[in-house]
Image (cartoon, rainbow, N blue to C red; front, side, top):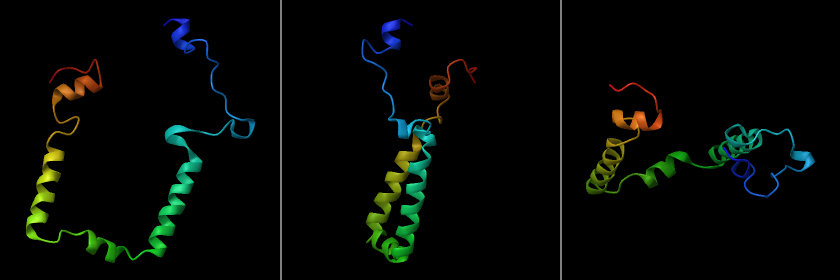
Length: 96
């Protein structure tokens, strides 16, 4: 890999402010995880979840059927269902 690609050109690498250095970011962002759990708890404590579920439920048999067909269509070709997808996602895996 060339030095230019590694350094993204002549731009300096982004640095976090001193107060934020050492914090885990990305999928392991502890602050974001903590905020999310707190907000979910607040929502569940303050909301009538059963009423919201009833309001979101299909209003007719036709709507229920449409939702079921959409769900089935979405699940029919998820990544990993086709052995070719697995090879694309994980190069070097043996062919089945």
